[in-house]
Image (cartoon, rainbow, N blue to C red; front, side, top):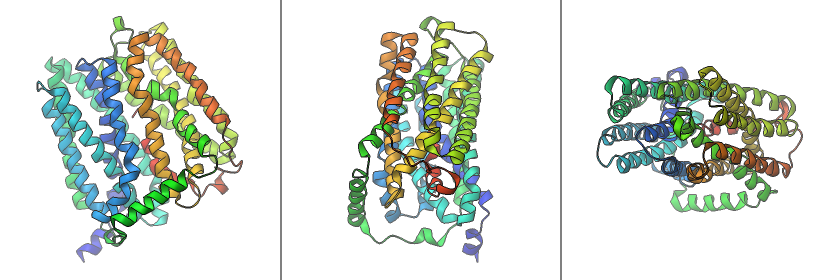
Length: 445
């Protein structure tokens, strides 16, 4: 009777909180770490190099995801990884005041990144097991909304808290340590809640029976068929280079906003940054993504490809303007960031739809997972040297280089061959399969 009651738990009790929990560690690893390291005095070269490597767990995620099914249930993985994420957040908080703070915090951010990537695998699989087909369709917007809320909460509210604590405590290290202790407590609470509230679907207890050897063979077949698809070269080049300007811009733009004026930055406080990037920027990104999805579903990806290419590249010019004009008005800065993020959200729809398009056919779920690995790699590689390039040439020249690199986005898009009907409302049954990974790709991770 108890198991039956738990299995019928309302999705409203766990879907929103599960995807809120999925968003928090990703934001901590990809965005909050940037601001923290900048406040602790690291150079832009060091920050972008160290934090870009944190993309690696999401790059290699498809290669270990099949083995999760044969070890434990997805519910077990979710609960275990949430506990590990909470411990990692506590580890970051504990090591910030230490003399070996850099090595310590990087270790725990690495642990958090691998835990978060594993949690993503389990949570997305559990979503399909814990809900019927109708519920999956109904809650896809809910899960996306709460992931965005987690992004705003992390990039906006938590960074604001750290900034205000700096003013109150007069200590950067102590302030950020307290903020991470708060995050650790929050995640432990989420772990306790999900340990109780997550349902226990019967399908989750069924093992595949293939064993490690069978899954390894299946993985090899998946990789082999992925690289023998039509237009494989054009497709992979598109996955790697469509977001090249964003890969360069992502981390450096955040550092530009908070860097001191005498270093060429706008000198925003953490609280101001939380408002600009973590709130206004995320709202722009979300609205752009919604509009892009609506446009593609009406007329198809092929019809909107070039407007989306322009949208994801041309608004980057606002950073050229900001670096030369150096405005003091927070309203102007907010408007510029909103425009750029709105354009990115709109243009990113083409990228996500193409990943779904390329993944069609046999092994589409596994092929889509490999596409998302290239998606993470497309942000990781430019980020590794973006900070060093910026420090070598300065912010103004760097943003001009970003605009020049937009030519690569146009070039790789020109080689694509897309079915004119793909993406239209009556011809996009596969589109829902890709929405599970949409959350992994916001530029301001």
